[in-house]
Each structure stands twice: as structure tokens, then as C-alpha cells.
Length: 270
Image 1: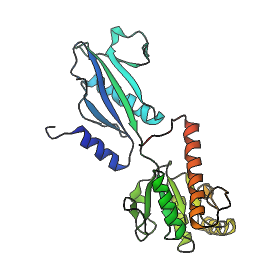
Image 2 (image 1 turned 135 degrees about the vertical axis):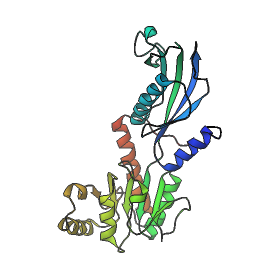
Image 3 (image 1 turned 90 degrees about the vertical axis):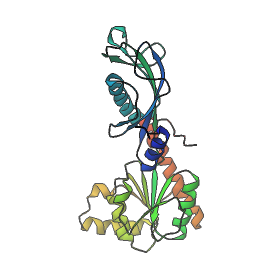
Image 4 (image 1 turned 180 degrees about the vertical axis):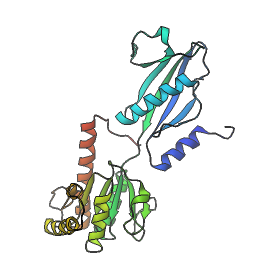
């Protein structure tokens, strides 16, 4: 642990692209091994990276961390001796966890979830795909582009139609803007991905034709039904920049609608 640096650990976790929490000891009372200012990372898989105190504190942090990842909300928790617990929420709003540790100390911790912006995967090396990547980068989305496509240097890259290395989740987005180049293969990869929202820059007739081919090839209808085509909100877009802007506007609408339904606050990644 001599070379352990919590801020390096936080940075490494951010680079994994997976959500995590930062737990910080903000106050202690009586005897406890926890020290004010101590920090640790709580991963989505239930690891605590860093030192926060004894087993009672660690159990509470794991539970609160998973809850915070689910809700997206920062919370204050308090770990205190069982005999001092009157209610599971103290008057100041802190969530209370019982401690059976013999030291008898009380520890307050701030649990802060960190959720990276969704990833937007864009198939295609076209004027619309380039414009969409540029707009999305300005809007703060993480990007994934084909290896052969132009785009921001910070974008992740994938080979052909292989999205597996990206570790996509339901809250990510895929837009097929291939426009005549491997349309069927790109659409299949998009619909087979874990992303709940998939859009395609194409006419409704073309999309229907491609979907019929995928259905005939055995792709389940439930996966095909996730496709939105034509991509974008109807703003009477004409040129590639406008079409890309309409597609991004639709993604923003989906994202904010999903967050509102889940009760999560809007993200702030400034």
C-alpha cells in the first residue's frame, strides 16, 4: 500500500469506462480506526480500493455504494454502535448503519457515485457520421468509431463490426450511418449489442428491408424492434450537419427521458 494513491486510483477507474463510487470519511467520533479525509473507491463489482476503517464500516460502504450506483445520488451515511441507533435515518438526513465493532466509534462518510457519460457508437465513414461525431463530442458523449473512420482522437475504436471490446451497456447508444457500406452487417452488430437505443440513418423502406433480412436470418424480433429509423427528430434536416444534429437531439431526448423515469438527477461532468 506504500505506493497507493487514491487519486491515481480514481483516474484509473474513470478510464475503465465503468461506474464507481468515491467514499470519503468526513467525520469521526470516539475511538475508530477510520480517519477523517480518508478516501476509497467502491467498484460496481463490490471491491473497496483504499482504507476506510474496520469491517463494520466496509460493510456499510459496500451496501451504500451499490445503492448510490443504482440511484445516481450522493448520500451521507453514518456508522455507529448498535446501542446508539434509534432510527435508520438521523435528524440530519444521514442514513444509519449499525456497528458491532468493540471500539464504539462513529464514522460519517460521503458516498459519491461517478457515472461516465454514455457511449455513442457510430457506424460509417460518411459526412453524416463525421458530423454526428463532432456534435456528440461537443455534447460530452464518449465516442466509439470504426478504425478506418475520421474523428476525434479521443474516440475509442473498433474493428469491422466487433463491438465486444467496448463493453457497452443499456444506457449507451448506437447509430448506423454507414449509408450503403456494409449496412446489413453494421445493423446486425448494432441490434445485437446491449445498447437499448439503436438508430439508423436510412429511409423507413430501406430499414424495413434490412430488418426483414435480419429476421429471416434468425435475429429475434425483440432485438429488431429496438431500431428507430429514420434516425433523428423531424426538424426538416437537409444537409449532413443538420441530419447529424437531429440524430443527436433525439439521443439527448432519449437520455434525459430515461433518467427522468428512473428518478436519477441530471449528470454533471464539468
